[in-house]
Length: 385
Image (cartoon, rainbow, N blue to C red):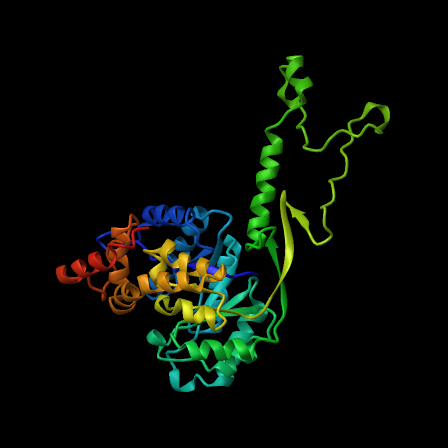
């Protein structure tokens, strides 16, 4: 599955009294769906996943899934401390239609998290997961930095498709890219080489079927028949002049013009060779990480500034190094202060400034002080999205 591009790990909105504000979550997801991001990550670290009950996590997964446009990749943060609980949450996300599971490294029993433990954990999850697995390393929160050698071994598993590397260590990213360069897989993509997932295929097929059911034969409309049950649904296929006894037999669907192109739900797709996909987790290191071999980013700063982050990726993708550098310089200070230093309270306040709903974080997080709010306002003044 293709994971190239920018994916914001969206926040979880709360009422002032701390309840999950699902209506605002729906609104935020609908707005992200209209931006150029490749997809969204639900209940990553920025989503305050550790602050939510199991019931709340399931409600957030469901609301985001129903609100997201079909063309965006949906990634569910399903990582828990045990493989059993991780699989239970992953299976629930898969039932809802999520495309990928983001599984953070277990960390609570840190002294026992040796390479053998991590290898067994991720392999067990990947063996049984109904959707592809994305490793999530975020040492700033877990205080555990998964060794690149372990990542290289896990990359051999066919159901582990990449890693979100949030250490900010560009040299480590380059090392992981080099160590996994031999991994070659095939992913279904659109004709323009965008991601195309089973959920997208199902949505496209359903849309075609609904459109077909709305069409009726002209002859039936002209007959004035009052019996709606006798009106046949018109298919999109042309009539076959060779049909016997006047029967209207549909022609076979036309074949794609190229043997490398297939059609699913009316959408042309093809296969693209991909490797083990490394995604960066630090917006201030996006460009150097892309230059080191990363294929995109899951960036907290993309929550309030999705377009600004996407512009860096787009310029790099187009080979415009100077423009990419300028776009990176434009966001770097704000990304460090708003997302990294001020964390979730800062990110949520920046969301409020840019037309999304940020709202309050959950305790023990505290809202920003007036001075810090003023700083965020100044930092975000040129980054309206």
